[in-house]
Length: 430
Image 1 (spheres, rainbow, N blue to C red):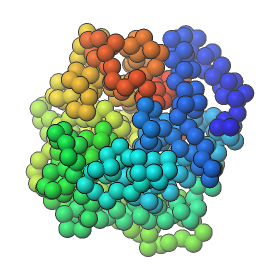
Image 2: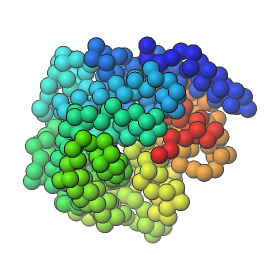
Image 3: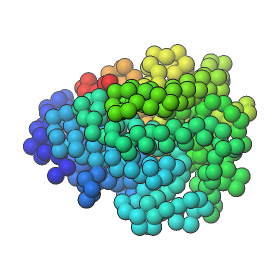
Image 4: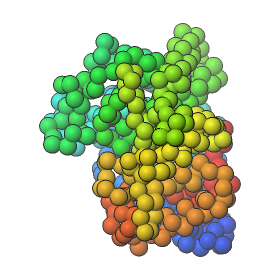
């Protein structure tokens, strides 16, 4: 059993009572919260957990973490649920050891990947091999939060520290992608967002101290290959690693600890030196992507990590001056993917249709404000724009919420749940 039904039922009843002033929130919360556990999680023979992203039969390292993160509260009290989350961390770590450049994986070594003809180093475990920095951040985040929130530490075994060293090695290598990396990715496609230019090498770039990314969290190719929000996330999880190593390693590897500290400092310095730009008003803001050659983009992506999510990830305070200027900029028409319509306004993406905005980004907008009224407005908006389905979707049209992409998208469901919990001051804090 993935969880103790009596404890989950009691927890849901508590949420229903808390949301009695907003019954529509409670109704959607109950459906979304149980759907992920009941329909996306599978315990494998080795005791690890495989988590489907929803309507695609594969597991993303990013999505699976975000899908189970809101269960950490209940996992403090429910040993079965805690074991399910522990099993996910262990599965993620084993998959990273199989290929740290893959973003999503099959349940078994079966060569049923979504794009078996991609020109890259594929194995039967890989569903898709789009290298994204955040794919390596998320498992470290979940391992750390599981420990800090519930006290569970069984995830910190030999495989974990092997994977941690591999992640550090990959990020060090990708600081100088052109000179040091063997990663290449070409897809035979007319959709340019699904392949890399320069025979799979990606766009030209110069050394910045940040670590290179081929693709965004949307699984679309980077235009400039230093993706600032993903580098922010890397800084945060490297700080987690510096806390984990001395506390949990049986034989502290001082060399690895020094490498982590140096890498973290280098990436952070790179963000502050190369990852800033000016908006139309002349204010200093975080760029979305840069190349170290003088190019920078002013935009944001509705996935996480995003610039909007920087405080949510723990990179900076909500009150940070540069963050606030950035937030104002990306939640405005200066961001080419900010859409306003008759029903809603928010962040869209080149990954989805024109004038479609993402519930994930709306949830992050609510999670990165201190204004309770703003949180409530966004929750009301999300419920009103569910297309009559009672669940969240990947995106919906700002003028007609009955038009949406992806019938079943578990990550969006769980981000809604996280915002509800946040509204009632039930936050995962470390």
